[in-house]
Amino acid sequence: AAAKQTISVKYGETVDSLQIGIVPEEQEAVATLQVNFVGEFGEDIGVAPVVVTKNGPEGEMANFVYGEDWTLPEGYTFAADFDEAAAKQTISMKYGETVDSLQIGIVPEEQEAVVENAEPEAEAVVENTEAETEAAVENAEPEAEAVVENTEAETGAAVENTEPEAEAVVENTEAETEAVVENIEPEAEVVAENIEPEAEVVAESTESVPEEGETPIESKEMVEEALDAVQSE
Image (cartoon, rainbow, N blue to C red; front, top):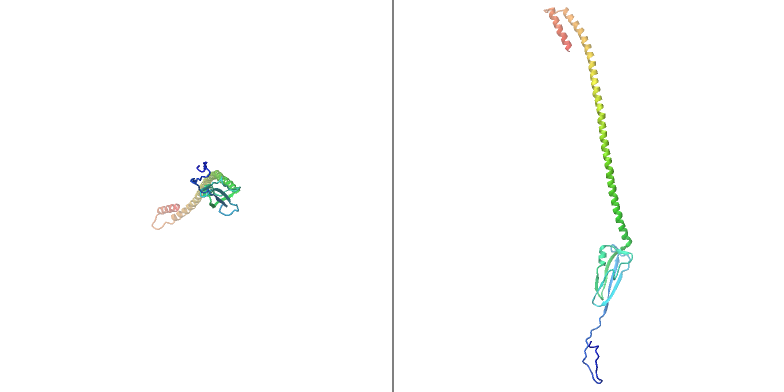
């Protein structure tokens, strides 16, 4: 304000008391950010880095913001979440400084699409597998029930078939036993008939020749006892 006021002096006079405060003009400087792009695993993928600059008073701070000052190359996306987080933070530096150490992993957008498509396919495979497993279990249950029913039916039929066979065996055994008994009785009768004449002959012979000291009556009794003994055998 003092410098810009009108100062009036008579010709022949000198005014040397005016003082005006001054400072050097501010110097501008450049802040430089270089973003390097690498692959998913940090490998070089041949994509040129992005270099961003800002001018400002030397010594003051410059801020670089993703989406405003720089972005990814066309056709690429972030390789991982931490790459996206690193890129979207505000990067600050002083005017006159350069930051060239920032690396961001990127992948082609088509690769990301393939991964996204693979997830629904994997889910579909899992769902189909579960459905097939359930169907197999459902189909197996009727088959198992049918096997049990067939087994029970076969067991019942076997029991039914076995009972008539057992009854037939018993009937045959009884018939055979009766036949044996019937066959034995005539043979026993024949034996008895054969024994009786022999006993009579013995009796007659005994009666005709009594032993010494015995009477005929006693000999007859002895013959009868012998006959009884033979018949009992």
